[in-house]
Image (cartoon, rainbow, N blue to C red; front, side, top):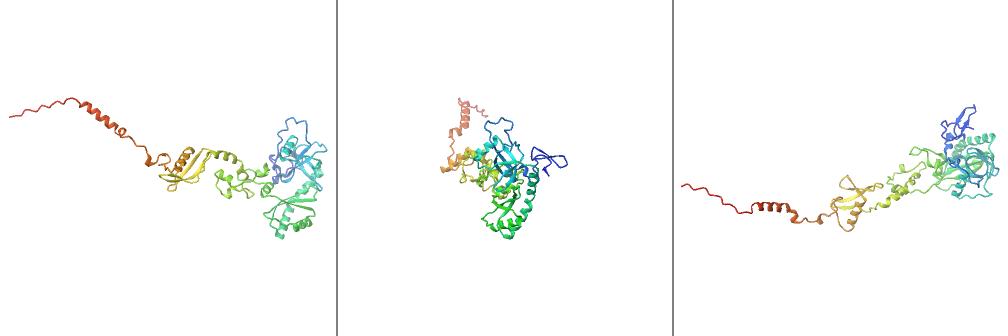
Length: 385
C-alpha cells in the first residue's frame, strides 16, 4: 500500500513503491489525504546511540487519528519503525504502525506511569499483503459509515455530534467517536447501528479538544494544529492567561478550531508571570495637580506603564520606579504637580532673598567702589558783569 496523495515526502522518511513500479514519496500508510501521516509523529533521537543492556520488549504502535498504545513483542520480531503489525485486541485483531521502540519507549512508560506486566496486549505478527488489503477495506468503510450514522442520529433526534469512525482491521467492530455537552441515551442508536452495518458497536465520548486533534486542521498561525501534531496533554486554560499577556479578550481571536481557548496561551504564560512580579498593581488612578491619570497599558518586558488623563488623548510613559514614587505620595495625601515634578505646588522650596538679589548687590558694590572717593567740586563759570 502506498501514499495516494503525498508527493513531497514530507509525511515520512520511507519511500513506497506504486503498482507500476515507480517510487512514491511518503510514509506509505495511505492516509496522506486525511493528514494521518503527520499526526503525533515521533523521532527516535537515540537511534544512533548505544542501547543499554536491559532492553525492553515493549513497542509503541500508532493507529488512526494519532491514537497510540503499547504492546509487548513476546515473539521477538525484527521490527523497524514504520512497519505494520497485527496486534491483539479484546475481540479480534487490529493493525497499526510501529511508531517507537527501544529506550524511548521505556522513558514514555515511565512518564505516563504505565506498568509492564503479563496483562499487557502483545504483537501477534508482522502484517502481510493480505492483512494490508483487509485493513485498507476497513479504512474505506469509515466515511460512508460516518455519513449514514449521522443520518440515523438526526432521525433519532439525539443531541450529539459524531466526529469520526474507526473500523477494526478484521471488520468485526467499529468505534464511533462523538462529543456532546450533555448525557446522551444512545441505546436505541447502538441497536440501529448494529443492525445497519452488522458489526459490534462501541461509543466513545471525546472532548472538543480531542475532536480537533483527531480531525486536524490549520490554526490562525498558519501551521497545523498542535493537538494533532505533537500535543498530547490538554491542560486547563483560563481567561487569566490572556489577561497576564495583555491580550484583548476577544473570543473570536482567543478561540481555536475546537471552540475553546487556544492551547498556545499557556506556552509563554510562565515567562509573563515571572516578568509581572516587578510590576505594581494599580487599583486606582494616579492623582496629580493636572487631574486623575488612568492606567492605559503596560509594557511588561520594558517595565514601562502608560497613563492618560480623561481630558486628553495623549498617553504618558512612566518607569516603574516613578510610578511607585507617585503611588507612595498619593497614599500620604500628597498630590504632585505632574509626572515629572513630584514636589507639590504649595510645598516648593523658597529661594533665599539674598540669592535672588545677588546680582543686584554685586552691581551696587561695583559702583559704590568707583564713586567712593572725594568728589571734586565743579568750577563755576565766571559771572560776567
